[in-house]
Amino acid sequence: MLNIDGFIDTLSIMGYGMGGIFSVILIIYLLVLLFNKLFPGK
Amino acid sequence: MSILFGNVFNLTFQQVIMWVIGSVLIYLAIKKDMEPTLLLPMGFGAILVNLPESGAVNQVINGVTEIGVIDTLFNAGVANELFPLLLFIGIGAMIDFGPLITNPKMLFFGAAAQFGIFFTLSLAVLLGFDLKDAASIAIIGAADGPTSIFVANYFNSKYIGAIIVAAYSYMALVPIIQPPVIRLITTKNERQIRMDYEQKSVSKTTRILFPIVVMIIAGIIAPRSVALVGFLMFGNLIRECGVLSSLSETAQKTLANLITLLLGITVATKMQAEYFLNLQTLMILLLGLAAFIFDTIGGVLFAKLMNLFVKNKVNPMIGATGISAFPMSARVIHKMGLMEDPQNYLLMHAIGANVSGQIASVIAGGLIISLIA
Image (tube, rainbow over all chains, first blue to last red; front, side, top):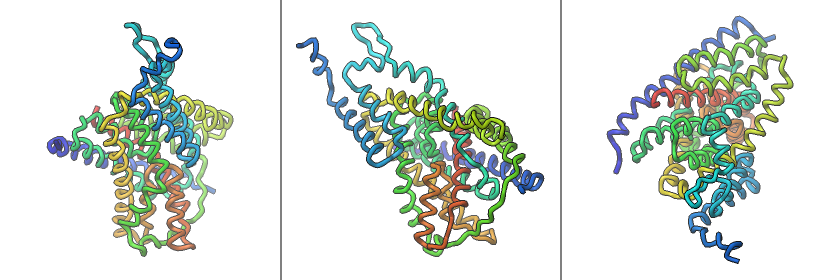
């Protein structure tokens, strides 16, 4: 028996989860750009 | 004679099947070199805990519970999440984030290639698993053993044995799983896209700031799992600070080896026949495979999407290295690139995305815990 209602409920978790990961990664990305600008390697 | 051999009659058919499974794991570890550090202890442990009335695990004999050493180790090191976290210090000390810091665009592939986790979560719920078990199963897609153990244990999943077997087996099978999936969703022209690599150095200040900042950001967004990313980044800081080289070496070798040695045989307690041999285990193995496949698809499709907007095109195969299986995935993609075009060297880009996958998979584990717990 497929749990279709449960499946639909989890779609929001998918949205929040992927959105959350991309948000964290975007912040890290911007900070890495900033660090590379402020403290360039030799 | 019955005193010596009476226990033979306590042997069940299911336990014999577990011996066969344990033997297969040992065979794969030794003969095929598939994640031997984990699969060999798990294989041995699977046989050990499935001996009739095995004293290695807790047994109730004549109404008295006799404590088994493997269950004791499980409670001391896995049930409280200690072993996977300590292992993360060693892993953090092993990782060089340099290729990622010099090419931070690769970070996004790590994020995209976690899609399989969330897709599998939905699929597992659709197939009837409750939400917490579904989350524990989905995290197989993190392609990261300690994260799988941490999350499955956090949710107290009764399927932890099958989840760990699936996670480590599929990590070893990355060279078999990823190439056909990538070929299916990319054209030959896309696979031949060349990517220039400019060797850049990273300042020591950036190398030191990186683990601290990643820990703070991930910890603020997913505080319940900050230990995961925190221990990983702690290990990396020890490596990069430049003043703790002996600690870094100890974390990379002695600590990681010691924990790995105990981890495999300890989780084997969940491979007792009564927990392991059921239809759910088979479903978990299939769902784990789905997680790896959809991780790969997520990463590749994101790279194709990115190519619609950027001037310097990305070889979409790089997207597949966003999974955490390090460094297998990067090597696989590098080899695939060379097969398509012998002058196409993708290794450094692939390493960058692969390292990003390590960070993103831990963040994904944290978010799963935060969203569901």
